[in-house]
Image: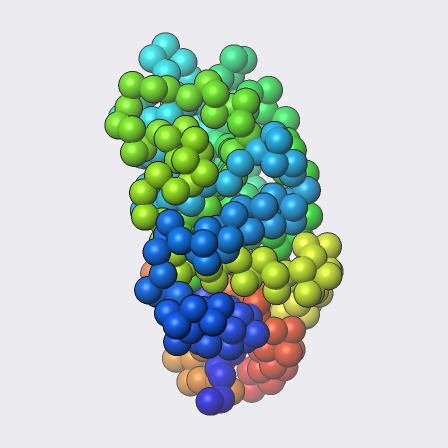
Length: 358
Ligand code: PMP
């Protein structure tokens, strides 16, 4: 099979060695006479995969299992938009939210009916083409919620601000793409389907001392503590997605860990941004502030929008797939997550150069 350069924003490209190993396991896992799709989530085979993924995830984040825990849930990151305030926003308290893009706005909309929400920072004035700055944190807030990478708009916060309250991060679209001082976060969540695996599992990394403060008057299955106390085996987890996540973690290790990937990711993004900037008469990069630019989702428009169809046609001829911008913003978006090959970025950069000269 000839693989295309898959720039899809998620579900997204996965490492080929992961797909190869997974395809064998779909037939038989660990000489068990069973497919990974058939084994019990209470059996030895799956339990080893499950615990290995949890431990490995913390290791790659530089977190200790004494202090932090990993929980697997369903429902995607969108369900976490509600689960977070349900667990941590108590009556009389305020939660700080940073509105850095459409997903941050959705998190805010989900929290508002559940308690007091304060917008501590927003980039709405620049239509989210910059990162929010000048945060106004609430003293004694229940928590501060931020989105690390704004998948739709193409901005990325590669640091964790000091909010003065427990920091909660939606890291759905840049998890383990670069080094982060995760110790500064009390809870991190992500839908796996961009940088960590296939759709179906939502990964939550939480500080145990923060979980200890969670509410207990909400449905049992929505309490993070219910899952944590059961080693994230309270109910049937999305076994196959967690299995692929475990393989992705091993693949990250083989790339020199997060540090190794960071170098590659930065280089990949630069290859494309350089061409967009060199041909700014043709391309209008959506994020102009270089420090705010995402290394995962690169967004731009054509100054002459009448050439869009021609751009897509040429891209298709070069097996460059999935470059359409999000339906709400239009234009183009290249999602170049961890598994996206550097060679594909070079092919896109060459095409951008060629197209600019026409
Ligand atoms: N947050 C971010 C930053 C995202 O990019 C996405 C999905 N594109 C979501 C949340 C929503 O994720 P899900 O579809 O898993 O609910």
